[in-house]
Image (cartoon, rainbow, N blue to C red; front, side, top):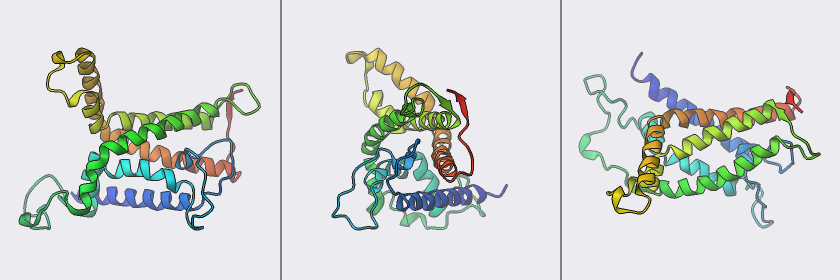
Length: 239
């Protein structure tokens, strides 16, 4: 397979996801439905003074989008895909970087903002809490009782994948114990060490969780819109 296939594929997928995300944000109408799109959670009020082109999800969606944009894995992916920096890991006559090495400046200027990734991680925990709550509601309809529908399982799979993506983050390793040089020197050090090792094991699969959670958000929103349009039914499994 040619070396340029992977970065070009990544670029295409990220562009499609970005365009789709921007479109669904603009289409938000605030109407209640049985399921709440992951793009619209949590629901917030919209001040009357804001311009008409601004929708409520814009006040929230910057957190998960910022978390992905500053993610260590995605930074590598879009540097290669959009900036060809580097276009591939191997060096050679056909895979040489297009820019001159002496012009490389690292993550400076605008890209220095990637250093706030850890704070986007904290914000993502808040979003995840609301997504778990929204998922729980899909199993308990407003009229009471308990149900399991295809949509309920899809919402559950989506929030699980988003959680795995968030909690396998490189910054998460730092939070749980990577910032400590001596575990025996701190209270609960052994527990911190075990937690750090557990997160590190999942961190090895972080790229997989990144892509699976990205597609799960996309498919979950599409499924909701197909139901709302009457294209497909939301089949009930239990209830």
